[in-house]
Amino acid sequence: MTNHKTVLLMGGDGIGPEVTEQGARVLSWFADRRGLPLHFEEDLYGGACFDRHGVFVRDATVIHAGEVDAVLCGASGGPKWDDLPQARPKAGMDGLTRMRRELDLFANIRPSRCLPALENASTLKAEVIRGVDLIVLRELTSGIYYGEPRGIEELPDGRRRGVDTQIYSSDEIERVVRQAFELARDRRGIVHSVEKSNVMETGILWREVASQVHADEFPDLTLHHMLTDNCAMQ
Image (tube, rainbow, N blue to C red; front, top):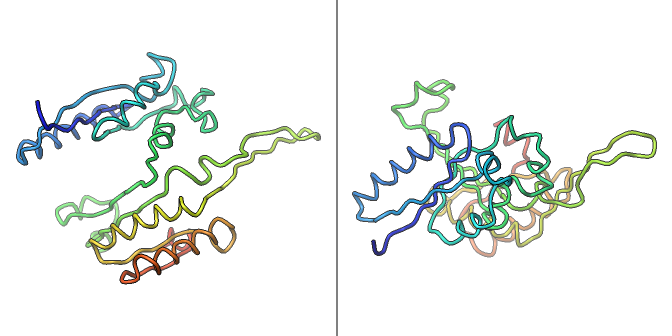
């Protein structure tokens, strides 16, 4: 097969394999009609990988994921593995988190759109969900997930204290903000930048960088700033 695209299927756990199998069917349907040959490969990650290999994702799998054209992952994890030391974020070995970081998958793009035919199937009233068409873009490889120091320590008086650190550098903010504007350019041209600049230093930096990227590179588009709790409420 020449000029084909390789898709690595990683079913994961629980309903994951079932979902990725159907996702592959949909991809194949479009590929057949667009003349784009697809080649599917499969590998393990998550609990299924741990049960067989003792790790949540193998080194060879991470390397191969960086070589193929696309990776389709199903849900991973579950009660059976949640309390294992290797599954803790600090260990950086929980499969999905490791692949995100090592493959530098910094932009998590989550579209939310309700088709008219599905309005009455939504848990929200049809008049509320009608016409919804938005994209939530989340930074995925920095921030509190990966910041150091972190951990749980015992104090001299016997109390225990948990510590997490939120860290962002300007370049990490720039690239995800830039991605948001690129997406917005093909839509309504509006970006809402969401942070906690009222109480967090990282939020202040985020707002400053977002404003600068907007002014320097996308002055023809619209930027609104929102606080996280206000955004969640709306």
